[in-house]
Every structure is written in C-alpha cells, then in structure tokens.
Length: 115
Length: 113
Image: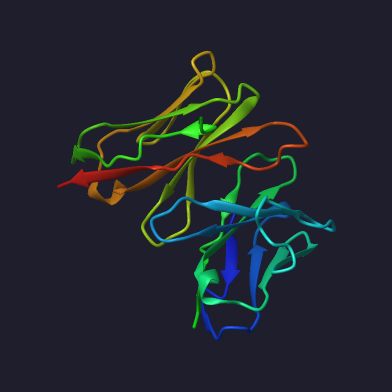
C-alpha cells in the first residue's frame, strides 16, 4: 500500500513555457500533499504544503505565482511551473500523507529540464 | 543550529557489518521521527517511523529514539552493497499547525563488498 505516482517522470520544455506535474495517491486518500525540489547533490527543499480543497501554504522564498499548486481531490495534486526558465530545472518530488496518519510517502519524482 | 542534524558522511562499512546512522534534533516539540532512504537520482523511500523512546525493529533495520537526549539512530544489520544510499532523518511535531517534516541533510552510506 501507500503508493504515490507522478507524471510525467521526465519533461523537457522551452524557456517561457509552462509545465504541469501531477501527483496521485493510488491506494489511499491524501488529505495533505507536499511538493519538494531537489538540485543535484543537494538536500530536499520543501516548496509548499497543500490540503485538499484549500490554498497551498508556500515556504518562504517560493514564488506562489510561479509555482501554482492545486489539490482538487483527495488523490490528486498538481504543480504548474509557469514561465519556466533554465534555473527552474530540477528534480520535483511530491509526497502525500493520509488523514490520521503520520507517515509521508513520496512519489518517484519528475525531472524537469528547461532549455 | 539546524533543527535536524546528520553527519553528511560518507560512512563506509564492509559488507555484513552493522551500519549505525545518527541524527539529533533541536525541537523538543518533535514527537514523530522517520528514516528515509534515497538512492542517487531517485526519490526518498520510507524505511521506518518511531514515536516512543526505545528500539523498534523491522527486519535488518532498528530505529532507536531517546527523547531526553534528542537523538534518533538507525542501525542496519548485515549491511549489503544495495544499502549504499543517502539516509535521511526527519522529525515532525504532532500538532495540527505543524504538518511538514523537517529533514536532515542526510548521511551517505557506502557498503563495500
């Protein structure tokens, strides 16, 4: 159990375009989802926390107008990187937590390359 | 002071040995603790969670928690080369206002054949 999927696993886009990444909890209802970014050889960096049906809470320094997060259902959250630039190239990972549970389960990640 | 501290390593152990990974935390309000394993280029995978003082065993893994000393550890018995990865320690307050995990920077483990 506790499987989280992400789509796409890898995406290449041109500078200035937008990219949407989907995160799904496959076998449980995720009341809370988290979005992280990780640059090569660096630590995980939490970008935002989203609760189903509510606005996401962004970490300090993360532009909410650039990284749009929608958590419209108990099994799906999306992250849209708007007007992507090469510096947005990174490994984006979501995680999900079920209601009443403490554990967070991570998706496999999406590797974004902006050219 | 970081909220969750880990030695970055690498920690090198021979195959079959016990690997001991350590983590300290500064927030006394932390009540839940987790160990994740992250292979290079992959996302983290939950290994164990621990909430009470003492030891918790799962297969070759044993998590240890000492809240008085604010210390969490992970022991890996009979280490295998496939255990070579970065191990992330994380903590969380069990409070509706504190949903996120606080991660350490990870300890890189190398198990040599």
